[in-house]
Amino acid sequence: MKLLYFAWVRERTGIHEETWSLPEGVTTVRGLIGALSERSPGFAHAFADLKQIRTAVNQETAKLDDPVSDADEVAFFPPMTGG
Amino acid sequence: MTVRVQRDDFDPGAELDALLAGRRDIGGAVSFVGLVRDFSDARNVGALTLEHYPGMTEKALAAIEEEALSRFDIQASLIVHRHGRMEPGERIVLVITASAHRGEAFRASEFLIDWLKTRAPFWKSEETPDGPQWVEARAVDDAATERWS
Image (cartoon, rainbow over all chains, first blue to last red):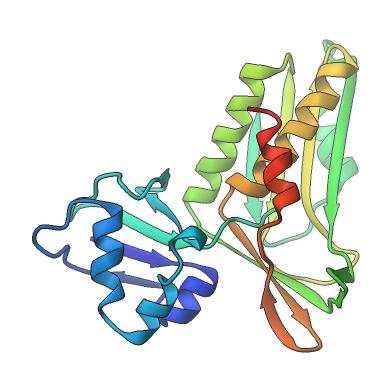
């Protein structure tokens, strides 16, 4: 799967874009965040407060319990501040 | 109905002229221009950098424009949103809505800017005396989005 990180989520993980294999048994956005949080202290810091994390699956806004598959593009970012 | 995401500045007058060229069904057009301020929550802001999610940004803006079309009787619209680094006084975003009657154009304009602030994947980072700071989402902007639901 393709993973993208933006704004301070990018800064904390230290990664903008990567290819990653979805771990076996992980089927939701929430599960994916849990698996990512275990990768490094930076990832744990980025995902420490789920209220501050927004997610998009295949470029559409997604919720924590939405499904993910290994073919998806998933992006993580803070609440949007455009305009 | 057009959406553009670009690094370069835009000319609001030229954009308005281009949008309305040849139209005889428009009674009024409303244009909104968002600018970079030199202050924010009591901090001095030297400049602003807007990060975005290429691909999703265009889709999200197009979806917001679609929503405006379904809610308001507008005959033409344009959203231009910049990304990259901008200094105080520079233009960030342009929203133009045009309709046979002004009321719909005013309402659609306000709706579009309210929604795109919280639903289009842009993130602002401010250059402050204490270093760069990510702008936090504001409750007042969330409330402005919510009042349309």
